[in-house]
Image (cartoon, rainbow, N blue to C red):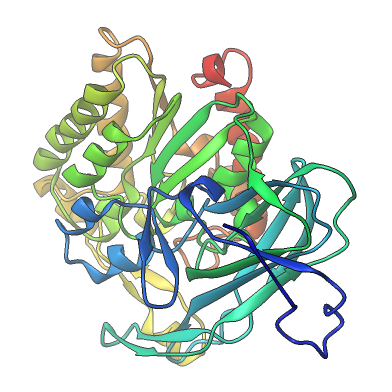
Length: 405
């Protein structure tokens, strides 16, 4: 039950509010598949516990617990909101500090402010050795004041790139879950680019932008480094409610050098078969990788560029050999050819299956003015471009996801 309490700091400018503390429950959280109760609070997950138990990869564990697309959704008359969280912030050894994660406030569907949370724990990652060190820190508070009067839908989007434990929610008026507005649920899976990579904030990742433009409720299963055709991910998609589904495949298979062409095609078929077990008639869009010049004809793996790290910059290089493609090593050109062929053959009996070449979202004509800063990931401006283009291509009338949006 909600409880009334004074502001945490009676000497602050917030002490005039008659705060109501409301327990954080699944009914108030959207975009997460599970909330884990920890000693510090509730940790949103984008993979369920049974799926996490099937993979010991620390990179996937980090990515799925970063709440890309996860938001607190309230119906309230509140003029002020405070959210206490315990973030975990990444620091790359030798690279400049990353900015604090951003909390975006959306009121009745429109941007209404942003905040950051000071403090938190720190994860120091050494790209050269592949090691990481966790340094515990204190929780902090994201504060939003001056909200419009009257009843309204309020969303607080959590940082897409910081693990975020939810500690406490306070408002100056009672809150309730946002009722169903009838928007279709868009379930999307992809790599770090779908996760948000270097987007400016959680509502400006390309999937979040596309969802807002397309009038869809986003469930984002984009995992940095984790779009690897894992069976548990396919089963998660199968078992998650969705009106529209898209899967963006290929770049992580190349930059991890995970499999050869012989294995890739059957793995894609198996992945799609599993998704279709739970969603036999749902519009399903397969998206190939966006342009990545260093991997277009050069296979993986992608490795840190140590000369860039020495200069204090994070960047990557393609460590494969184009000649190895003859033996089945995958470059992005091979991935696109495979994906296009698979969808063409399957769509003969699956008319709601479609294909989108990722270069329609970011291609050669864009790379000159908007190069990938680290060789792999788009910047904030490119996320906006991709979101706008995806909405126009997929959600607009006649698009592959238009029937549900």
